[in-house]
Image (cartoon, rainbow, N blue to C red):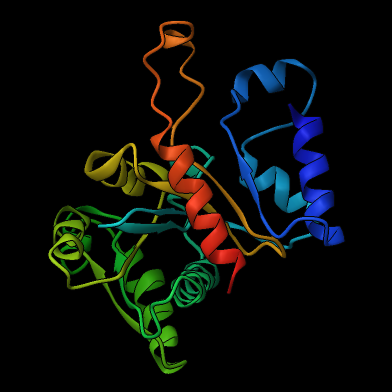
Length: 229
């Protein structure tokens, strides 16, 4: 499976393909083969020479980009303002590429109630707010840090085009709850276009003729759309 990934990346870098779309891989199974593998996004970033990468989950109703993904929650809480800022910037660029010229970006807090003025943690005041301020100084329409328990509802109601989540589950849970079959995983920060399904290998339903191709179809459509811009 990784050989196909490597070949697809080489084709995109060499100009033989304009985008790549991946099916899911089981991270544990790949790791057991002897390969160091934490996810497609990180693996393709290394293959393509990208210094950084981010994961965007894009659906028709909700789009979420993540500051961190495949690391422990304990590690994810060690936020860096430069990384938060860069995530906002990459998210903005992705929205422009899919046709939203002036994206409105909501940035989640890390702690309950976005820290409640420092009562539940100071990451919002110390790390996230300065990153948002810098993004605004660059001309981006960013707002935050905002409480994560309400910001996704606000995005669904049309207030925001993109939500910046601080860690994997903060963004994945609402995105998959809203549109599990239609959401697409997009790798940001790469020199190539790469999209994928938003789900795993689902070994538990293998051979039962009940898997849905909807997310793969959506990933193909978005790859074509992004490659054309």
